[in-house]
Length: 110
Length: 116
Image (cartoon, rainbow over all chains, first blue to last red):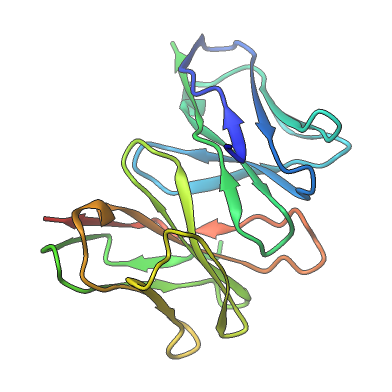
């Protein structure tokens, strides 16, 4: 059973579009949730943590639904520079191993 | 912004040889990790290290692998007798979560290991 599942995409969207990614996790005891961004052949970089109350950082909004065990990421007004793979990441607790999803590929088209 | 530094960026080695991948975590971080990513696949956990000992390891991290923090700044991953399937990008990461359960890792830029 996969710990974290994501739709691999690819998502191809025009500039300015709004796009949403979802992710589900299997362990209901998970406590830490993140979205990371990975460019081709580069390291994952933290995009944002995901809090139970939902949180927003500029054009990015993350939501957590503990009851359904899913996490979402909404990107508004997509930019060309948003093209990357978005990784859903879950951990049981701070300091524990991260479980990565396979990533969702996004390409923003001019 | 503090960085996790990894060397070398690319290592080519012959099957059966030993390799050591080096990492300098962020100086005030307390947890250190190694992950790997085979080309086209997801990022996989290898091992975590805290308080000078392994705190968690995956099934991948068998007797072929070992980690060390030899001098208080470096954090190394040794792979003995490399196999072709060890070819991957190896990422070091560090964190200092404290009381914040949502404190993410900082990853290094990775070492691409190619076993030939």
